[in-house]
Length: 265
Image 1 (cartoon, rainbow, N blue to C red):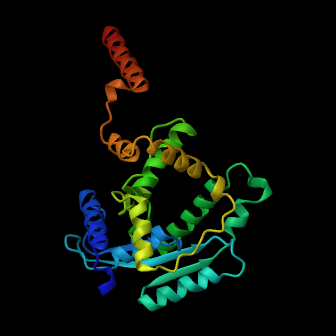
Image 2: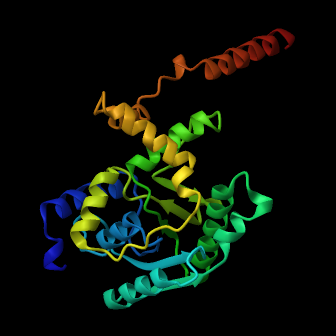
């Protein structure tokens, strides 16, 4: 471990990262973990924390994967990120693609973010299979989970969010999110502390995305109630099924069906 990592913030983040991993059994002995690194502060912080000695987490190996969406024609960020991987001694796979421009082309104006995310995720799954990774670690943090809940409610008409540990392909792989318990502001602070070679996003949709709208909305609400985000996150673990009208209607329907079946028999 480098001396620069041994700060109060480092130990705080390590504690909550390891707690999330243990609470959801994200990593087990001998796992090969693919760490998705976009070049942003969140993913570089996740990689940095996972690449330090663990107290409670079993032994595992990791490989870094970076999928360049192709927004930056000069590829300066790509080259800087590759230099960082080499200097850190990481096993890594980096690919340049045209996923970004393709997703923002004229035929896909309605939902470029969905297609971009889907294509990048598809390629990550393919690489994970090729190099034998059974866990895919993504850098979604607590704020991402809160924002996704509201995005799905406001625009998708459902109550759902990201899972800390999500089995895919029948359980042969798992998507894990070790930063589940950690707030975005602390991750950004840690990234500045560690002076990561941040690759700024060149995505044209980023400033006007739904996620940006929700983030700004929460910032506004937080001015009156500083616990807004914390309360929403805690509410996900305090769901009162009997007070959700849709589920209550389904239960009543099932009950009526059982009564009718009993009368017929």
